Amino acid sequence: MRTVTAFSHIVLHYDEIGLKANNRGYFEKLLIENVRAKLGESMQSAVRECGQIALTLAPDAEVEQVMDVLRRIPGIANLASALRVDSDLAVLEAAAVELAKTQTFETFKIRTRRHDKGVPLRSMEVNRVLGAAVLAAMPEKTVRMDSPDLALRVEIAGRHSYLSMARQPGVGGLPTNSKQKVVALLSGGMDSPVAAYLMMKRGCEVILTHYQNQNQLTPSVEDKILRLAEQLARYQRRTRLFIVPFEELQKDIIKAVPGPLRMLVYRRVMLRLSSRIAAKNRARFLVVGDSLSQVASQTYENLSATYLDSDRPIVSPLIGLDKREITALSRQIETFDISALPYADCCSYFLPKHPELHASAGILREHENRIDLDGLGGDALENARLIEWT
Image: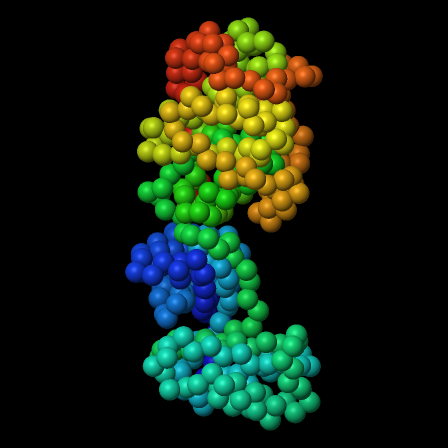
């Protein structure tokens, strides 16, 4: 009798959620909601089983495509496609042999984890029995505990057990929560997409804002921003991108503000407008991609002067990272190649060779007051475009 089902299950493991004690169930349910939203009809059901989540896929689901979606969902530490069988030693033995016969290997080991301590099977006993069964069926193979060609995992979770092989790493962190909204400023550079991703990983729904100068706009420029936003959308249930026309405000700033201070005033004005977007969308924080002292606008004094008058708290998840660390994260989330494409953003428009390094908030405020922020800023937000991904 055939005891092995098709690879119609995926087992999800988490790490940080497991530390939530009495709140763990809440985070598990939130993670399942996010998974269901991303997989749609590819998933039939999701069950919480003893510290893991087991998904049953639809018969026509493409397992590799589903795995690719799941590995980007915050809250999942790792995942594996699996065979589900009854938690019976004879059934497990037959399933292990059948699964091993489908693989090409010379050395192997069995690794069992008993999630449900109420099941009478013992991990070492299962390892021994299944290992002996594989050797009996394939006597040319060898057991190796360190770095075997095939590591067959057995996870006993109550009435059912799951057999799997290679695990894929996930994002980890916490599942995104639509009640925890933030607004992130998205430029065409490397840093801001990484900052947005890190906030998704901390359980926030990130609303993206991009400030666009029509004088510098080409199809490739807008395509780059859309590609960055689309890539980031793979990490959360719902993504909204506001593209805000900045040309008229920028002209006003150029007329009113000396060259060395323009970059900082640009940024202060963008924060003001982003705060208004945050207010309308019930977002409590603004998110920026600043790294302390990485560029002239991010010196200790300039960051203080830029942030000081914001009416929303500003979060900068990259503040202590260097460019090497940020680049590594950018490659990991697959925004690096997009960010590396040529692009002229608003903040590089009409800037001097030697910008101010030690600005004060008072001086910036004085120059900012000369700008028609209410009129031009209101027009910019009224004419902003909204693009959504789900």
